[in-house]
Image (cartoon, rainbow, N blue to C red; front, side, top):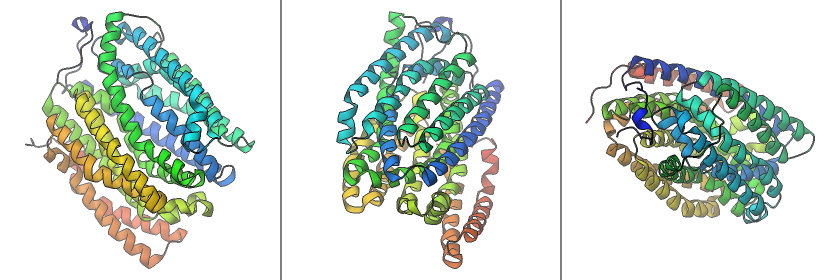
Length: 495
């Protein structure tokens, strides 16, 4: 599909062609910086979580935080009506339409915050956690900060400026973590997360403004506003549905099983998100911009998606297998005996995490290809099918039943729907098979080795590291045949 055009597209400057070497260099450089950034930040968050879980907060406080975080993420998905993506996707000089984007994004975020401020007690009550009301009101201040920061942050993404993004994220992390730890050890409970998030977002906004000077200018153009809303609202709807998919479980667990069970589930879900956040998040910071540049060439888009999927799956499968197969000893080692009940849900959530990585990449590709209607249909199908399955799973099997319900819907219904949508965009099944065959084979071998070694060696700390190293070595041997493909060898044309 042709690139999205703005009202000013007739004056758009020439952009990199899909096959241009300069685009490849930009993407590779941005991907490296993004991966370094994500790994460093996530390791820092991991260490912070260990400190808080072991010494400051219990399952109930984590449950309250999980509720507030869920509401915030859902609201963030529709925060600026999807118009912020125009900074990345539209042709032409973004400074020409950035003022209108900033005005729309800020206005919508302020209105959303006013709505959640008024309704916070009701929302917290419906989720069976009245104590979350104050946390919601503070944490959702991030809505306003995010609405303002979308324009300069989008400009940095458009320019593949992930080195500058790393500095900004580091500033965000240091300030938010410091505030959270100080308040948590002072006895502020879940409220420490809220004020830490606000402090970090203030730092991120300041950093984005400095890194992309001139992008925080308010303005209004009615023609641009109409075009932005036509472009953004379908994407905001699809994004809202996507966030609902990965957050409706928190609401189901909180309302059905209580805050303590929710605390265990949130910890397990966060652990299952380690591979998603470390690998997928790093890729998504450049994937949408990269796919947008390739959207004019179906063949280039298919090849780019196939290789990106191969890299993501190859890097994610071993982490998912290790965390799933060694769930109980890993949770005990990292968080302590108090949190071991969370391990029962982790193997299923790791399978879900692997599915999510592929679906998120497909989401970015379909957005770049202009397949917005397909996205909304797939995400809507996912949510509609998921809600009753999760409710039934919670009643029948607690947090394990919820996790199993997630996997059943994702693998049995959503993956086939995404494959169909990708096929309509010109990305055939052969491209998907090429990307996933060797990693999945390696994952199967890893699983067998892990289970056998665990039965022989037990689950002590030394055995944990021996099993992990052995299984990982077997995986590396299995995926070696795909190294040329992952390093950029040309993919044979697929049907």
